[in-house]
Length: 147
Image 1 (cartoon, rainbow, N blue to C red):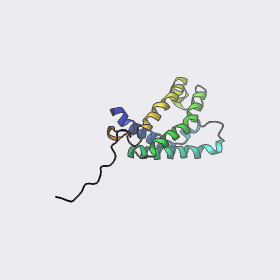
Image 2: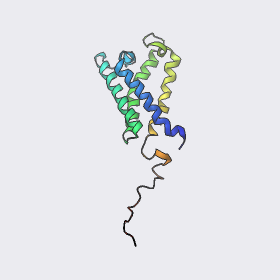
Image 3: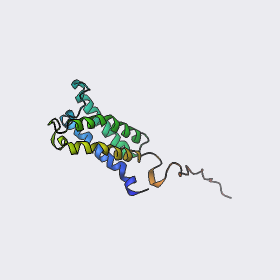
Image 4: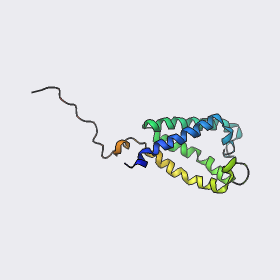
């Protein structure tokens, strides 16, 4: 298993931790990214929910739990519409800071693919260089009888 493949879930977990904390501490940062199809009265709650989901996924990725990979992929899929909204609004002044630059906003969209790949590296059987197909499974019990 390559070093990148082994470390990828940890890198994604660090990104989820940072983003999740910002969602909870400064939810207004993400308000402009909310798709306009979602009523404004739901924005703050969804921002908190996505931040909490990112923190939960980060913990699962670090621990390499069985649910962490699919949950992380689901979170990335769930927040993708906000990334699309950010790209559509780029240059309008609606997005804060560098996110308002079209080149930044549009180049961010394909970054979701390596993030999904990183999440999938946390699947059981990926630890210590073993794939599920090459994992010999548990050893048979040893006999304690002698002679």
